[in-house]
Length: 330
Image (cartoon, rainbow, N blue to C red; front, side, top):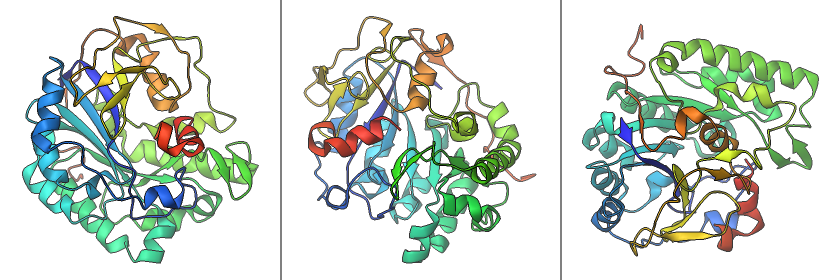
């Protein structure tokens, strides 16, 4: 996989789930999805930059986007994608049939146990998980590590029925049920978190070793941050040149709370920054950690994807306001 720039693309706000730890309020998650371009218009606009993108599709629930598979098919003609998904949408069957796994860096499958139970969604999740896994997509399961998840860690793990795939605990950050995390984790919860992390690193060991680049969202070492997430402000960073954030309309920003517009993809006015510059913002620490690492700050990065399926057995700043600011700190 050879690409010039990675983008965290918030494709939409809409989501069919209402997880109580979600950073978006219900009225935002319930917004009607707006398409600002056709699949070909988006793909052509990205290609018009002259750059090859790794586009991390997130939301909301990206697979609920109208023409989602057509969009992915158009994008992956010349670019690569990664994906956050709750694996509930029927579009994923078509995705598995039509999209080349070699053009998909990774799929982060969010488990969300409470919503699965409320919506009887566990069977659908495992069916789509198995379908994508068997089609050769690089995929792992993650779960936001609420106290309830940590208390029932073994039961949560049993909810995933695809051999070789176990839930990777994802650090709970920000306000949840009146307490601030990760500070609010108690000693028992921290040890349960560490145990889940160890189990996940073991289960996905071969898959991680086969990659020369971490997943776009990489929670495998979240147990390192139980005492607090790091700050990157002032560190030399490739955001703006090797990484950008894209909002649903196509507006491009350096990252998180940096509101300096770098142009718009659909208007074909985007221009990357010339090089490295100090971090002046806050964002998802997965991206911050990656793009302050000299390994990933060069003009182009090439990473080989596995030549076999990853787990073959043996085997809205302006619109969302404070809610988006919370996600940008996650």
